[in-house]
Image (cartoon, rainbow, N blue to C red; front, side, top):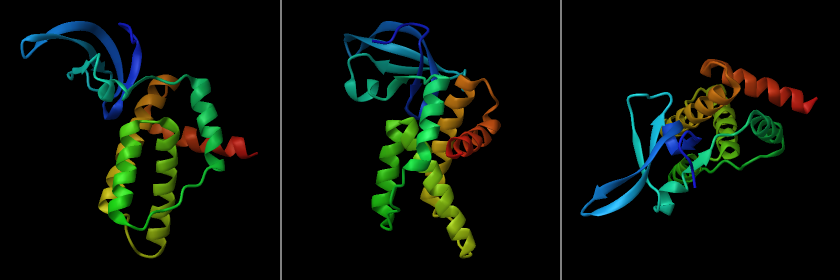
Length: 169
């Protein structure tokens, strides 16, 4: 169970602080909620029912710097096959983003950037749905890495690239 002041990643809301755990009236019955404040959207508040496993499974503690570096070092070893079926690919990518698994998100970003580069070389563009998934995955990774590493969001891609290069040598 998460505690007040824990820093968590909550799905596409990004890095959040658990500001309270409180009971609220929900249709005549009291329900306990985690009350989250996204750190990059301070005017937002997210309520997650403590006993809703589907929603709480989208919450996890933010990674440590060591965990981030280990995940980045493992990237060059993994290759995922590109799915030509747009519908199946869109669903697969949506599932990856919804799980908010850092390793999968980095893998997704890497795959989409490589595919975009190949498309551009052929005079094409990345499919709109793929571009959206890339932006969402990049936002999630940049939010968490920026927070944990204490660097600006715009420096996260070069941090990942440099760390990958170091792990190859």
